[in-house]
Length: 340
Image (cartoon, rainbow, N blue to C red; front, side):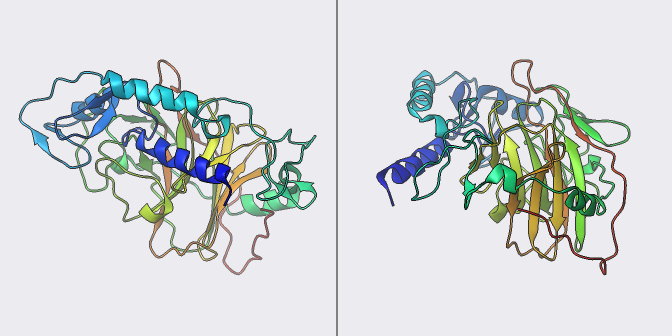
């Protein structure tokens, strides 16, 4: 393993230590609460606004009175120094020029097609290899399913459209009066789809537009929905995300940056339960984004959505489930053979 690889791995691990467990992003105005855990100022105050008592999302310690919080200036300066010290390839969420092709132990090779944004498959650019044919798109869309949002799982900060196809954040600190239940996310601004899948192939499309922050994917029924959550496969989530208007990432733990040629406006999700795969595509460019393969699903899976918190007037647009034609095929139909 090269010195650069070790350095990059260490930087990623250190970056994870500088992430708020509520918004899953690098701390903004970090504060420490009496139990010793750190959060973004707005995140922990917003979390307490949705609670009858002040408690830590991580250790669940309860405080008799709501703590008076002050920004930890030394910690904040440390985080800013860390951000500046990172190489562009590790600047999570920053809109920076992507690197040339990384070919593992091979030399970097320039590419006139994707301008250095992709890895290589032999002598063919990944962007070309991942372009879907019209036939493949037709096969995939034939498994379209009518996904709707489940209000019983919605965080109290979320607002749904009447047709349950659109979800947005009303206000970071506004408490929506909703009955608590085991199914509801109570701190992270997440929601699941109403439909559950235990077999077969399913396909749906979500419009993300120009949102700077979002998560999309699938989640298994037994996921933790209370307090802070960590979105990764070992916790029952198979998702991709975007943060601060930067590149997309696969939530693999640690996350994997996906340096795409273009950021998608619409993302399609294709689930093959028996095959054990969850794939993501740019629905308009008809290109492959990322696939979780070799999974072993053993319980119901639900569509997973997180519109994320607003960022100084940005990221206010909703996530919108797009209408699709077609329908779920019978299991005896020919299996999809998608290019990944």
